[in-house]
Amino acid sequence: MVNTSIKTTKSQEIFAAAQNLMPGGVSSPVRAFKSVGGQPIVFDRVNGAHIWDVDGNKYIDYVGTWGPAICGHAHPEVISALHTALEKGTSFGAPCVLENVLAEMVIDAVPSVEMVRFVNSGTEACMAVLRLMRAFTNREKVIKFEGCYHGHADMFLVKAGSGVATLGLPDSPGVPKSVTASTLTAPFNDLEAVKALFEQNPNEIAGVILEPVVGNAGFITPDAGFLEGLRELTQEHGALLVFDEVMTGFRIAYGGAQAKFGVTPDLTTMGKVIGGGLPVGAYGGRREIMSMVAPAGPVYQAGTLSGNPLAMTAGIKTLELLSKPGTYDYLEKITKQLADGLLKICSDTGHAACGGNISGMFGLFFTAGPVHNYEDAKKADTAKFGRFHRGMLEHGIYLAPSQFEAGFTSLAHTPEDIEQTLAAAKDVLSSL
Image (cartoon, rainbow, N blue to C red; front, side, top):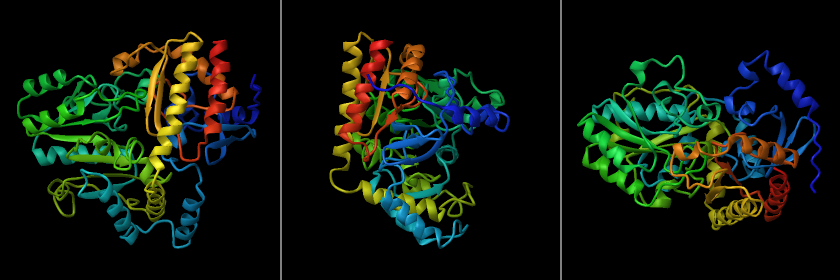
């Protein structure tokens, strides 16, 4: 039996104070542990595959700051590069050569990207790409998928995933109906539903945006032919196909999901990994479309901190590390060991479950499944996940505090980390 006694006195004190200072005591909703019960642990430091809280407890981390820590937290080469960059200044608000370097790396890696614009977050990238696709097609309507999350901008808060799914919120108060009226939704993996929307809205749909592998309603993979079908439908109707690869970009393959599945969209949004742990986002695509972005064209988008030298530096070093031979083979090996192991333990202990992985991204649903879309995901036993999450936390394993979030491994995770995690899962699942 693994030791399950953890002391969280300081975390509790800090979080109690935080609730008087910030809404819900957090800077982003899912951090508050609302859906899993209990109070969040307050981080003190991170390194490699591990985190330490303010009470001194150590955990194996499978959140990885929601994906960016793919090389491991505080990777020494990233930290060293940042120290050098820091001495030159924290922000320029002007062009720097680092932007060229990272832009070339992204363009070389991602099949759809011929030009790229850097921003500060995935939400920003998705806001900008929506404006661009509407301008390029001179159409207003856009199709998104139920449970897919594209940031918290008004027009995307329609049947959204991530924190919206975790908290069970309806479409957010404060979002005017006029803003979301042009956002059409369909179930993920349902080509017929998309086809029907195109038929019901002839020459009105600017494009389709999706997470090619859903990570914000839990881990949901595209059915065979789904991405290919979307590519054909959008081309047939003169609409654009947009892959939101904020989560999957450089995570499931160096060239993202589009490289993994061999389907090239017109536009792509990116984030997380390409900042190496610092705040960054980007969008890119065909040159003729991207040339419409100001100042080259009339579609306005700007940002004082866009192309920040520290974020560019961390991104460059991270992509250098990821481009080394064997990187994604290793991520696949250890993540499959974890995902397969969890499913076997669930089966052995009598818990209905489904899940899997692609490279360093994985998921586990407490339902017999299969899970093809958000409706399927909602059949999962969230109360059981909450108890599982708490049990794993007490065994020194930090998982995303929501049934509806994917998990992440890193190059710093070892086979021993995975074995320790599976041993903890066996203890916890045997007692649920």
